[in-house]
View 1 (cartoon, rainbow, N blue to C red):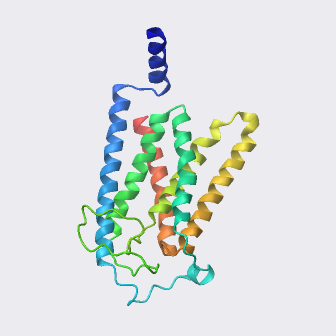
View 2: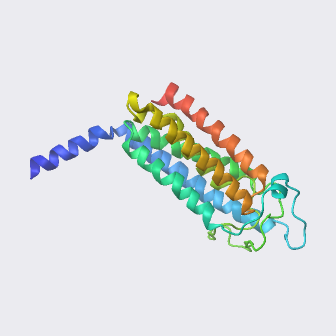
View 3: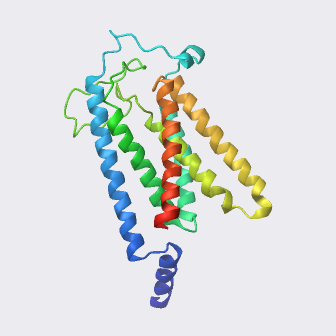
Length: 235
C-alpha cells in the first residue's frame, strides 16, 4: 500500500508541477484574487447605496433595450456562468500546465475586479432593472447578487469572456491534430454561448449594453496583457 501511495504522490506532484515557487505563486494569486473579489463587493455595495432610485429617476436610454424585449429570468445569467465556468475549470485541471493556467485566470479576473473597484461607484446610474435591491449600509458585511447600481461594468460578462478566452488560447491544443475540426466546433460553441449569455444579461436588464461591452473590452485586454507578462517574465 505504501509504495502505491508514494507513486500516486510522485505522479501528482509531477503532473501538477508542484515546486516551492509554483505553490507560492499559486497561493499568492489566490490571495490577490480573493482580496479584489471582497473589495469589489464592498464597492458594489457603495455603488448600490449611492445609486439613484430607479422608481423616481428615469432609466438611461439604451439602443439594445429598444431592440431586445425585456425578460425576468435572472437565473439564466447565473446558469450561463455555470455553463461556461464549469468546463473551464475542467480544462484548467486537465491542462499540461494547470498551475500556470490557474494563476493566469485568477490574476486576469483579479485585474478586472480591480478595475471594477475603481469604476463601479465613481458614477451613479439608475439601475436598468425594476425590483432590484438597494444596499442601505454595512458595506463590508453585505453580500448579495443583482443589487441596484452595480452597473459599470458587468461582472457576469467578465466570467463569460475569460472562460471563452481560456478555451480559445488553451482548449485548441488539447485536441489531436486530426481532431482539430472538433476544437473549432468547441470554440465556436463557447463563443456563441458567451455572446448569447451577454444578450441574456441585457434582456434581463441586469446591465446596460455599455456595461456589457466594456466588460468584453476589459476582460480581453487584461487576458492578453497577462498572457504577455506570464510568457515573457513568469513562465
